[in-house]
Length: 218
Image (cartoon, rainbow, N blue to C red; front, side, top):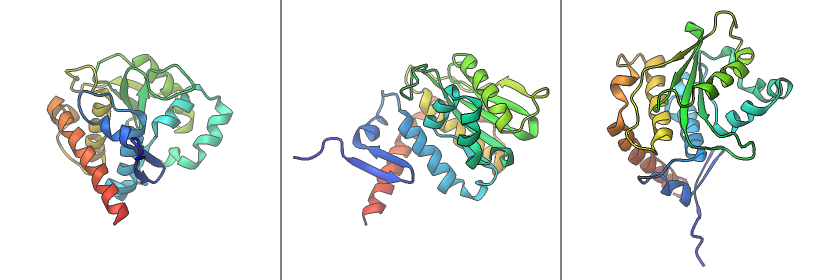
């Protein structure tokens, strides 16, 4: 009997099943596995030319960071070399259940070293602010940011027009901000990322996964 939820793609540390790929069809919330895959693809492939400047934290790691103690975090984060990174991207979720990743809403927290600030991009403005601020406090000593000068800034960005696209906004905002930060794209994230581009991004991500899966078996 065929496996109805077969493995679609094994990419680095990401293992995607058919049920994960199916979430890219509207109107579905995307899960932590899709966000984790996209982050890994950005870091290993799409923006590998700037990997020394970027850190993109996986959703599963972020969930651990939220609830781990300082001594555990020291061991956990050491291999990421965060003090050397200019930009640290953190997908934020409001889930308070330590046994799983994912909850009701995703947003994006970005540490920008040159400005000594954590920027928060929330497609449902303010919804995840408290969670994002707590994450900033947890990460501050590990990015070697001076606490007295560190700022939290709620950034202007496009808002989702439905209840399910928050995770896709995180990916679209992440992709554009990396271009803005390291490829000197002049247009701001609010000028580029909107509901239409996010809907298009769903299709592009599904096509990318399908293409990578095809290449892996050829």
